[in-house]
Length: 95
Image (cartoon, rainbow, N blue to C red; front, top):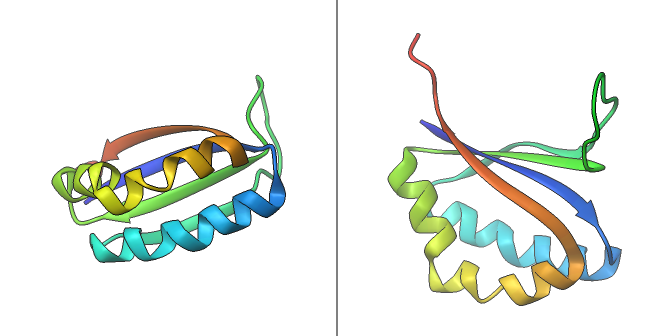
């Protein structure tokens, strides 16, 4: 499995809601599932955006295919107006 972690600072809540509604089906179309999303409860050290999202994909190929898909790429202008976001990916560590 692969995980995409997104750090989010919302700038426009209405646009962010619209972006989220559009992004959800694109994630599902690539075998992704939302594991966690919401406001950060506490930051023990340092500075972190107000929200975080974790999405699980079957593998890195599926995660990258989702991000690069025309359907998701079409949402990016709205996303950039709605929030400042950083996307990073991880492979699931071996057991």
